[in-house]
Length: 111
Image (tube, rainbow, N blue to C red):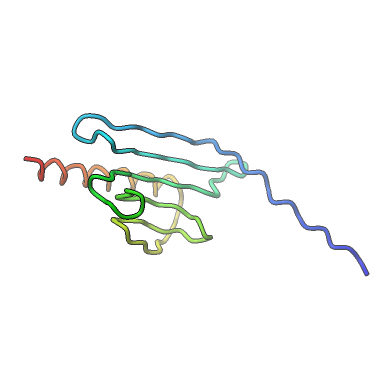
């Protein structure tokens, strides 16, 4: 009986770990970006705009993208749906544009 050796999973390197605590009108809100790499490739990520004053569900996550559970997906106001993923840089740009649009709408509602 031969012994099977399990391959050790590749060591992931968390190269991006940013948390921004917002102030002013968005005091209490948080923007987060985390990304783990295997070499030069992003293999795990999480992007989130968290504001419990706007979204009581999903721990306050208004908008987010991640690939936990081996699936690329989008969180919005407590709901989750699968997304098509092309590359991390494009996803970050999409996330940033969506956050700007959300903030524009939030600002209009404050007036």
